[in-house]
Length: 511
Ligand code: GLU
Image 1 (tube, rainbow, N blue to C red):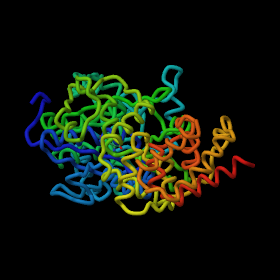
Image 2: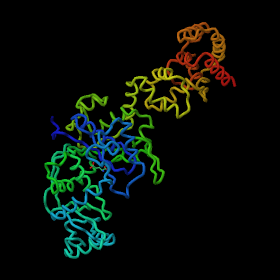
Image 3: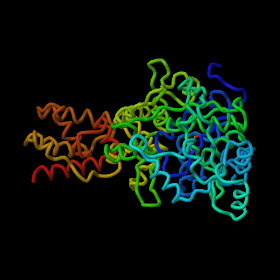
Image 4: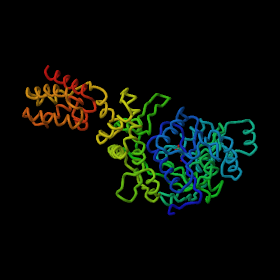
């Protein structure tokens, strides 16, 4: 094992239910999942919902649905608790205070009674050109109202009087805080540059910083992959680990590279601007009804989505790009995760999807395509019928939603016929040909071979190249210049429907 492992690994994904899950979030899930699967440990989902102001209705449910769609089922979660529950931080509120108080006892944290007005005053007072937003840190703390600056008696009294307070960590001065990141290697911070983060809020809820450390400890987490945006919080976490539990118990961290869009960090706005999804599934923010499109509804296969995400920041060290989940699990290695940002390219994402459509068997595709056609009220006949048709057209589909256009003419008479494309090379001879062909069809045995043979013979006897007649026939049957072999289409839609579509087009052409 080269991945610097502890025994009995336990890996977690710990999202905050603050909205839809964007592709960076799902990639974090994926890397945690791949790692857990590879080394045979449980994959844990913990909901980090201690920030009540950012809580969004429905977001937790949405996370389950996304994980379910991607096929990454947690072994332990709020919905499926193991022995380390509860798995939702808001239900663990009573646990955290003890740890915050332990830090106070050790002189590593303190009570702070500053009012919002006082905090604002501090920001104004200490603001300089080079430091426009001063932090509550070692250079400031002794100028504020906290248990470091007021007497013990007064602190006791204020606590008794239930004066609102928070507990802040007391970051050491001029120390190097360091750890080994699985991706970035040795990472060091100068402790004085880190602010005294709030650990316990006035409402008694912990902040993320305290809760993440306490829970990773209590849940015996050994490894955590998380976004690079958390790297700057790592010194606080390392300090809390050292102060509360010992660094030897600290999980291995892997801070994943950012996902880049066309202009820097990929954002929801990029999706709207450039017309690609950034969330795993459709999401409507209940606070303002803002809608964000999902990869699922755009027509992505979960396998393709996972495959594409794995390649955002990781490579297998070979030319291979298409991976089954099982293969990804075997091939995955932390050493091959890049440090630098990974560029998201929607065209490449579609390429993965197209490859996966080609690779997936028709029966499996049926289960993905049928619901899409059903939402469009397209009745496709039997399962066997649609499965066969999927096989005929799948080479032409990049997204699952393309199956709507690529299959609907098998079931529904096209509303629009691209008559202009026929007209460009239309003449009386071709018109005659189709009129005779309609008559001949009456007695024709309705097999692909028979239709094709009769069509070609008749073309020859009319001294027209069959190729020149096939495109008009295709447009008459399909509505446009697309679809699989045209005689196959005719055979499938049936004799009566074929005649009727040709007649309808001839009518259009003659007016
Ligand atoms: N709750 C954090 C988030 O929403 C998780 C950060 C971490 O994994 O430590 O992203």
